[in-house]
Image (tube, rainbow, N blue to C red; front, side, top):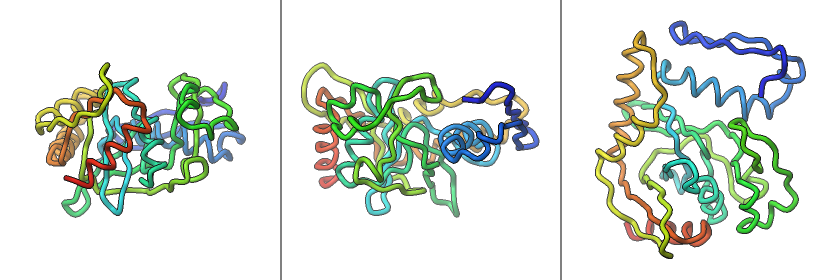
Amino acid sequence: MMEPGGFLSFDLLRRRVMGILSPAAAADPGFWNSRLLPISVGVLGTTLGIAPLHCACLDRHGAGLLVAGNSGAGKSTLTAALAERGFAVVSDDWTYASRLNGTLVAHGLFAPVKLLPDAIRFFPELRDSTPSKTLNGEIAHEIDPSRLLRSQWKASSVPKWLFFLERASMPGCRFLPCPPSHTQQFFELNAEKLPAELPEAARTRSAIIQRLSSCKSWILRTGDDPIRTAAAIDAFLLEV
């Protein structure tokens, strides 16, 4: 959160950020990594050819796995569970996609993974962590997966698989093939509205989302806890 007296101003047309920070905020890496940079990239990214996507991204041997879903579906706890199974973490809540020499690339900002207090049921390592208020106002544990989950960070990955996470009342995991139209509709509807003065940015974002829709995609309906769901994903990816 910004300190009293501090402010940020985003100029989308000129692609720049101006603001006033206290010396303490300016010298705090945590503030930059978990607050200022995510906000700035989220607001300005689209004007720079980057599409902010509301999803997590993990990596296995250079192949990217995106996990999308509505708020409360359990993306962050599943991200943590996959990290414990050896997936590298690229991003938790927001992923930033761009095209590099014709290849779609997903980027992260090394922002911490956010786990709600009840996640301690699945991750006993959280007993030594203190929850705090996050950027969206939630009380959560903000963790470094390289320290707490025996995983590693990775700056970017090339998306290969995409799961839309949905909670189910029945136990078990079901993987339902997902058409490209579902992917495009989901990310277009969850994208921030852009001013009419930025038509090129809107076209670029739509082109990135359309490219993303060519990834292998499934709707994952799970009634299992995140640990079992991560194990099911692990086994499923070995077969596809």
